[in-house]
Image 1 (cartoon, rainbow, N blue to C red):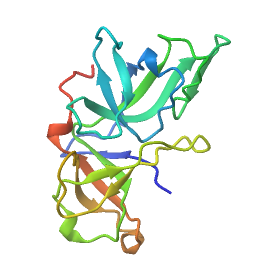
Image 2: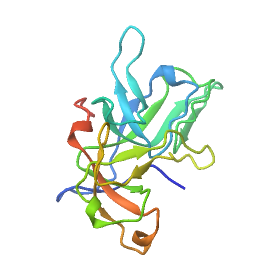
Image 3: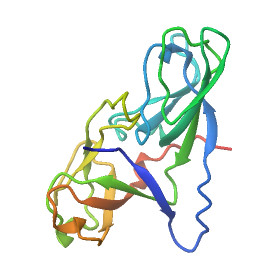
Image 4: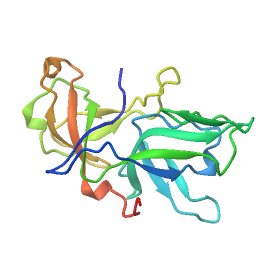
Length: 190
């Protein structure tokens, strides 16, 4: 079963602090869950939308991708502060009181489940992601990596290796990836 993206280390010689940033979830998403390990977009307020985080199932359909959801907090209909590994999107949640904890895309290496047996020829090629929902039982996204040596359209991640623990010979290997720079938002995350 796919589990979305998991941050595993920082690129280069930077320390892996496990750091994340806290950003508001769009008020319009009350009633819509966002799953752990799923890519996120940042929306700037317009006449029809408020500023905040939303799911971004096709991360390069625009340059608004900011990171991967690693948890959330919100206030429910009973005015109770709730914390979870994913945003439940309950329709009773209070608007303006939901926040996402986001692992930024820039300089972060992620682990994601691949869609085919691993081959070193995938290293360096832009690849697509597949999936758009998640599991309320686990809270995890169902997004996985469509491994191929040529992808167009909204290809967004670059495989850099595979976890070499025996899983590299399976049909759904755990692949290490970086997001393509063109898919990273210019919205500052601090």
